[in-house]
Length: 115
Image (cartoon, rainbow, N blue to C red):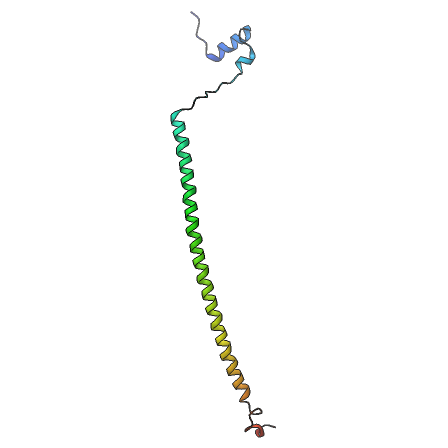
């Protein structure tokens, strides 16, 4: 009784004997059927990707609205600060005018005190 050969040794023996052409030995074959678990996995991945994309879209809407609210608040604060600055500048100008007017050389009653 001869010892059994492995598949690779048997193919080599047949190819050497001329029984099997070289093209048939190197030919690949794929199983074109689709398994149900593979199909379910693909459907689950697609659903997960779509769900994540939709969730990101909804969160962007919330983020944008919160940024708009913050921007409006900042603009309001800046306009209030501008009006406060204008009021302070007016008060400073009034004080400066009063100081300039109160100099001894400018007032008619104290004009004679200065040379």
